[in-house]
Length: 286
Image 1 (spheres, rainbow, N blue to C red):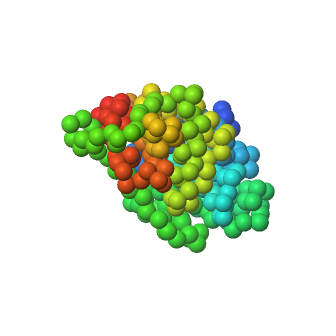
Image 2: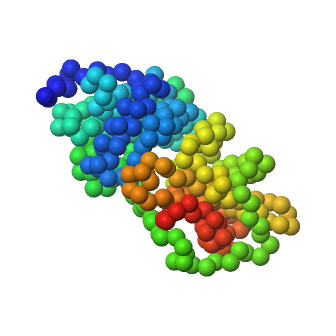
Image 3: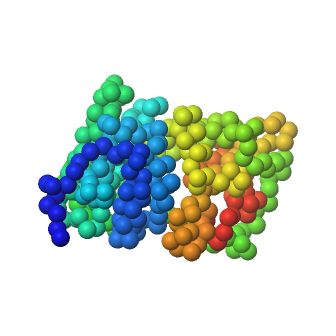
């Protein structure tokens, strides 16, 4: 039975919606193919992110207990020159072609403007959205809303094992695993190295704590390179691995969400050190 879009319930997303959100995201994955699968716990991590204001920045569209679509606007508490609010969203394949995508994108943009006015009214606002480059339906919504493509990203994969090129540890450096003792070095180095990336801003401590609280974070497979003489942290690598991805694909991947090298140590083999990449492999590919 087809339900009229006007009969669906709209309300802010709540912490108790994690199971419904995971079901929605996995249904979207089947059609749109982002290469991402979600457990209820993973969806809860997204809902509870400190960058989200659930009341002001999210909309869930519900058909009974099923989430038919959603929109969220993630604002930044710490901003340099431009306040970039990331708008995300999607519509369950069963509920498409009813205008929900355009409605939810408009809601996300409106939320971005409201959050910007609340947190950083004196700075320019940029509303960012990311999607699969092959998702023409999403692109049509973006164009209709006046948005234009400004940047493309590549998802790189490489099998691990003998195919990883041998890159010796640079002289004078030692490898440390992540621990509570060097947590501050990871955060400081990550925040320093992200500044020269497009749209990069430092991660505030509360967002860092939330990231480390994800079940996907692998502290045992995250590493720091330190200068043995000065004790300075010069490079870092963080690893995540999602059980939901493994359950869906049968492949245990290592995702490397952040690799950073201090400026003075670049072009010296720090980021490509095979000692880090070999240690960070929980399974087959990265």
